[in-house]
Image (cartoon, rainbow, N blue to C red):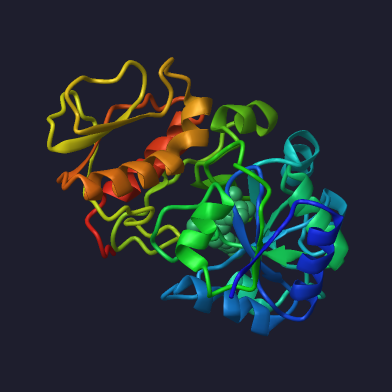
Length: 328
Ligand code: TXA
Ligand code: MG
């Protein structure tokens, strides 16, 4: 039985009590809903992997109330300080070396000697971490491989009965996950495009390595960021990208003025605004998947989205949702 808690002092207190006892609580952040557990409790972290049905122990992001708390657990450098000052709280995750005395469970970082740390810009998330008094490990609150949740209802779709509670904090304003940036090598490396744009990051610390094209790891190259499986965010219906025309047998995920003739349409942003589109992306994939299946449509066609600003993160998620299922 999964309790739905309210976005108030009682809901936060109950959520923190569940976490303290080793339970799992989903909660809103500015990006997507997270599936939280006490990051210092290895049993709680193991329960996160089990609830998601994650096939491997991909490392999880550790969420803190502020940079000072985060930087007590990792080795900090100048780029990390500059980015934290400008972009935290916010949709940026920094991968840094763990400090030897870091109390975060090794399973949180999947046994790596690095840790991904982030300060979310959301009152619920911050209040819950503060009430627990420890960092919260939280992947997106969906079953492994499925579309990330941007509302409490999405969380319940995938995880009802598998987690203790969800705190309903309404829709997530950014709508795509945080940008993941590794600051462990000679140059900063983009591991996952996300809510903090590459443009904003490079304006602060100069050019960063983008790694493999569009952040997708090449097969056989070894996964730098173990969570970056190619097929991910997959709806049930197949996804076709770069659609320039559409027929009545397909559902359409539109960007800008919608193509005519689709069997069902969800418009990410009628004005072609990538920020609005990011906030509606996962909602749109879920909506078209449900309506498309009910109508017997054969797939979801997606109009092109330019690769600038949040468009980079949107296209990364769309490519994964369209990738052959079960890869790698
Ligand atoms: O916006 C977000 O980041 C959301 C909210 C809940 O904060 N969380 C999220 O977590 O998207 P998750 O687990 O779905 O994605 C975490 C990503 C994965 O690609 C993982 O491989 C990478 O971060 N990651 C975590 N720790 C890492 C590490 N030590 N080294 C390299 N990559 C790491
Ligand atoms: Mg995820």
